[in-house]
Length: 341
Image 1 (cartoon, rainbow, N blue to C red):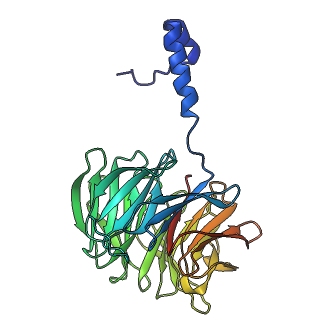
Image 2 (cartoon, rainbow, N blue to C red):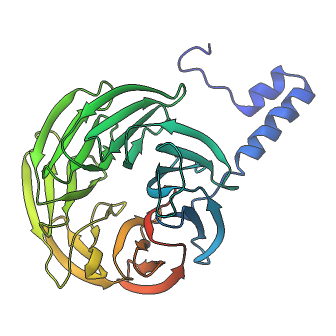
Image 3 (cartoon, rainbow, N blue to C red):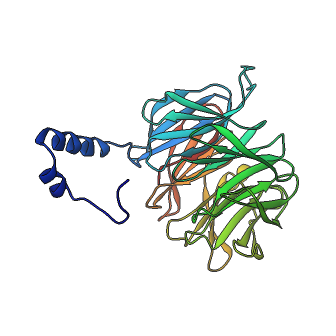
């Protein structure tokens, strides 16, 4: 084991090792720079059983990964090498298999591993070091906590009826889980799975996201037409923002990197609402495709992507001008979208 606080420079290594070994090390370092770049977006196509890979520079589909089953929630590893998707069987095509969270190679789409979870996995969260997986099992009303290296389920925790949204706080301490039919969000200790508390939300809560400093959690409520703002330490409700408009049903959430804007997909409202956290109020509405659901921001926060379930496409939104700049056809019933950050 290397002593704590010990760091070796390249020059120090070069002076201590044979030339062939040094070249090998430098070659590995060069290869490590050849990672999948953060200019990719990945879209789960719920009915198509596929994932669309999008080049976010050209805003076009560059690959389609065939997975099978009914695909919903997604995540991407911190290094951008792996894409994860929740898969439920049977799908609309009556294909058969075991419900799982599936890991794929982000470049090739090759299935790398399948993680056993509970019944009907919908959304999930993964620790940054990919050691733990937290999965909302909608039919079972539970969250599975899986040790990723071994694939073993460590805990199965009841969290309320029809859990959907799962969010790991930016400080890695707590897991927030929304329960659609119980109108609440449950908070678990991320290390132990112990229940820390819960809070009431609007009717049929869907997604959860956080301020960059982890002090606030935002929870969308589909039937309530609201976004609840929670203090992540006390679980007290700091405010409730109502989003009005024809057909509006708040769904997906994305918080800007600087924390100054919260984006909310509105489902059959066919738009994205922009909230100002300082005012706890909506400040803009941006047109999108038909029934936007999952949404994701580029790392610099300048573009927002929405998975539009009824128009089978992805809307690309310029967040600076707050306008739709492109529509990208994808697979059948796009559900979620993720971007490496």
